[in-house]
Length: 383
Image 1 (spheres, one colour):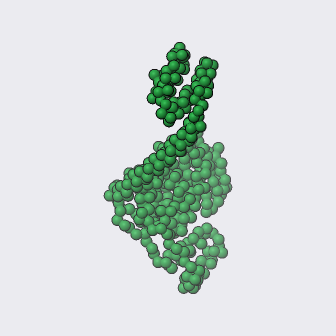
Image 2 (cartoon, one colour):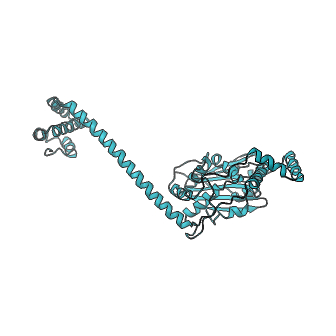
Image 3 (cartoon, helix red, strand yellow):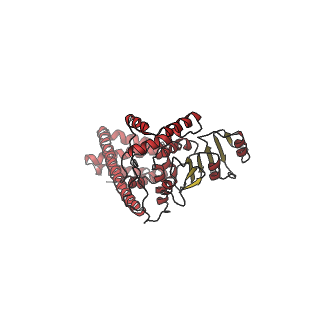
């Protein structure tokens, strides 16, 4: 397979200006550039720009995919909707890290896969972009998966403490499932982490609680929110206000540290993997036994249907062999197997052995047929 590299950037909060699109065009004459995206495939060469710089300057989401297993995914979020210190508690030096620039923070997930199913990557980013809204609403599961990725690649020391465990790890949504699949995060490792994860995210406040919260806001703050709303220049105003309301109504519900280390999670994942493999082996054994019983029953019924037709079948074998055609030899061997099994079922093994010996002597000069008899273990007769 030839080299394949896929790059896709998306601008979500604001469209690119004509000047910005011209700046991007200077990096590639072949890329598909719109007011909200930059997409290009490279079969030779590479992107001349720096993806991190582009994320800081132009875009809110980025995906990279190469056919040798390299994968990268980045999101840019406003710092007012994702606390940099919170993000840093999940980050490592590689695999998952964050970078601050002005009023934004850029999260970067990176993975190198050895065993993966080939995919051109053109549908990945659309499936992953919803994670940005989740993060801005306070769902930190994507960042925790980034930390797990670093644990999986042994970038995190075994004695390193686990970061805050977000709720809902045991039931990932479609975007989180896609992230785990894209990066190749081990499902058993996720299952181990989920054992200490509360089932539910923080519930949304009721309409009555929101009404009460709004009434308690100082008039100056209400006026400032209305002005910003009318100005319409902040695409995250709704998320910001909602986030504040949930925080102040419900109180800070910080993720609880439960004392696990990266090494303990890895060890638990190994136990889960062993248990899963044992169950899968037991399931396969049960399914195999059921298939074998069904096949044996079907075989028995077939043989019983042949009872009384032995002479006719032996005559058919003779006719097939007389054609001297390899394909007919195969049919003859199949019938001989039926005759052998029927004789064994009826307790007439010696009769079959006698007739088989005669058949071999009559056709000993047919090397192709004798080879088929040998493979079927008919040479010398069988009991």
